Amino acid sequence: MNKNILKKAILIATSLWACQSIAVGFTVPNTFVSGTAASAAEVNANFEAIETGIDNNANNINTNITDINTNTANIAALSGGGTPALQLKDANGVVVGRVVGTLFYSGFHVLTGSGYRTILSSSEGDVQIFTNLYYVSSDCTGAGYALKGLLANNMDLAGVVFEVKSVTPTPPYYIPYDEPLAVITTGSFAYYDSGSAAMVCFARTTPDQAGYLVYPNDPVVTGISNIAYPARMIVE
Image 1 (cartoon, helix red, strand yellow):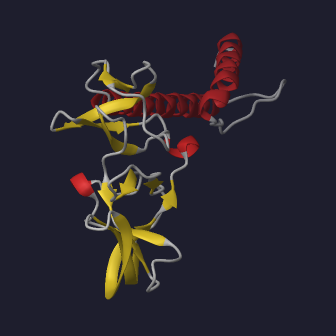
Image 2 (cartoon, helix red, strand yellow):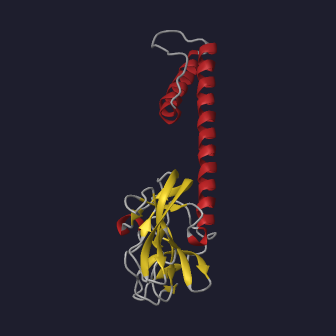
Image 3 (tube, one colour):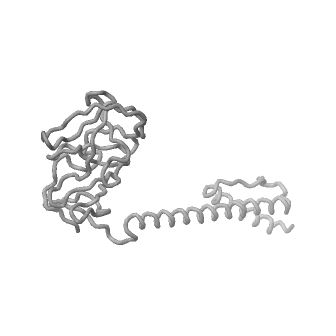
């Protein structure tokens, strides 16, 4: 092999290896030392290693592009296909969250910036998801549970903010997103008695009830206020 050609080939191979090793983390099989003869086979092997590394890098880039396009499409779908999402605001124009549904035109299913969901009355500004609280104890004391399937409007999932059934608004509760579904034996439940206009504890043992442990609402976590929003609420 002509020495000048060999030197140029070695220089090109070494330069490409130095650049590409950072990008894709590959190595060449042969290392050349000044003053030592290099065979064409060794030089070609280095070129083949560089070509393979570049191809792998290109494949990784294509994979990343595909993933990015997929994620972009998913984000667009969740936000209404690129259409600006409607926002629910209180009477003072303060944004509560994104409207993701309506309830008989009197309430709005809202998703807060924290990712929690509830339904708010457009005229009253309060939470419109209700349920009874169930307890393992026989006297409605201790931890309370919301049973799966009993939350109104099919909102019986983790990540929801709700109130206990009552004639007057009560501070809401919430179910954290990471709260596991529990199977318990309930010993009592608290409900609103319209005759006495008061909350009543009813003792009843029922085994194998599936439900979520509930917590007093934390507006910092859920993005939902513990008191009614200034009404009438508006959508823009």
